[in-house]
Length: 493
Image (cartoon, rainbow, N blue to C red; front, side, top):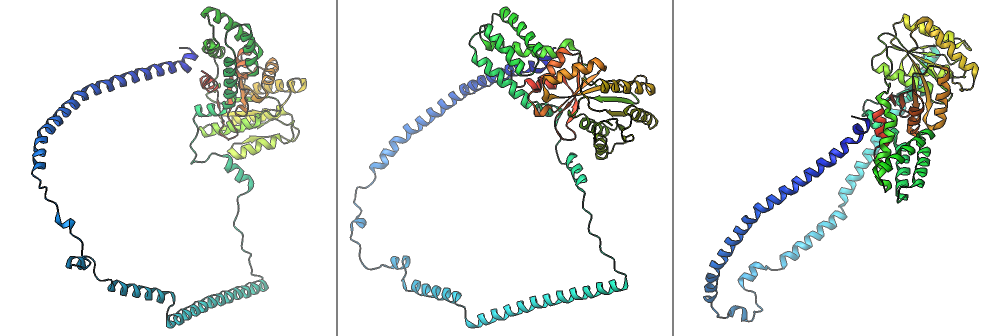
């Protein structure tokens, strides 16, 4: 089963199942209605028989009723009260007496007697006396403590009480950065859907608007489609290749309307990433020590990704160590050391302005000696056109192989997804100098240019192995092509 069928094939089956279920439910309703109809007819017949039987009896009863007028109703009413009226309507005098009593009681409540007012005043005076006594006791205690402190100071025995310790701002920041136990962790699929929302929204909006604007499939249609794909950062080569393949498919299927090609467009995008079913997305972990070397330009989130990975794999039970080999940028070592403190992972550092290769050598030797499972090496950010810094990376690779001939097991290039096609250019240049084994795509949640993954997949034989989902400490994970393509294209097809 291909990637497209795994992603979207179940939608057709689901729709078919829903239609079959609807038809079965409708058939069941018709059958039940047909069963209820004879029962209702039987009930109607029985009611009709009862009415026909009872009608003569009712007529006979009406004839037996006397036509004599009711004299009681016609007689004039007297103005005197009978005994029944007196019982039903007693004399109004008791009611008037009770009314006067209620008014007197309410007046008494509003204007209490003088004795009660005196009692309340006496109670108020006693409450005031109690408050005054409490204040006097407090002041007496205060002056007694003051005299005791002055005496202790004079004797030299006074010890100043210590204020309660407060959490430092750094500790507060670390606690805020770490995930709370009460928070429900996101699943991997939820993280992909959240982080690819901007890319998915931008791509689907462009594609839907494009298909709605065209009434027929012609040459203008294919030229406009190529422009839409380029604006979605899938790359010029991907856009032109896809347009040519669609021309062939349109003739083959005799497509007349643009909507007829929607499915074909999505299929071709999925086929580009599928690429012979060879993904190589899994990280190359070893049974003993795994060494990962991280490279990239400044500002792409390389050091932050290393810190997040240290936290992730430490939580999985691995013994992790980090190496701060970025001695070129001011504050880079301190940044990684701070990450080590946050996630409780040791960091190997060197002297100020030390040779990065020597720091890496010390880190690898220490990792071997301490039986570490995973060693993460941070290097200086450098542009792909700086020959001296690129030569330094080659030297670091040779130094690692002196200790471990098969290391580094992963050489990962960090790329900022928000840079779009510039990220593709960086990957091309770095791959000329270093044997890159994979890519880290960072800041994917803050950009609509996630389509660059398709361009990288098409033009370079370098898989994306790690993806940065956001700013939280656990917002990083191993790349999964199916989850990525589903998050990218969900809702488009």
